[in-house]
Amino acid sequence: MQATVRSFDPAAGSGSVFLDDGTVAGFGPAAFAGSGLRLLRPGQRVTIRRGLGGTIARLTLATFPLADAGGQDAPPGAAGNAAAGPR
Image (cartoon, rainbow, N blue to C red; front, side):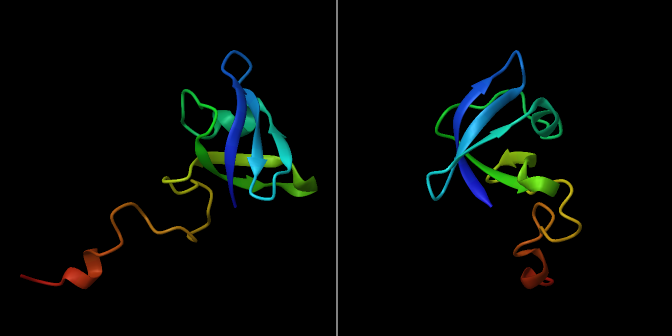
């Protein structure tokens, strides 16, 4: 699921996002720490994954695959490589 960063506190490692339906959802430092990112800016698009209970458990930039996708996301560079074939 994608969302837009609403706010981010770099000291706390937590913030909030707007879901595409306009709902605001918060995330804690554990979700941000697992992202591998250093900073988020308001307005950035992110991909989120909710854990049990609906809380945001993981997030990353919308252009990056989530690390814990369980094989659902294609590895970087996978698109187009198999179709190229030998030259």
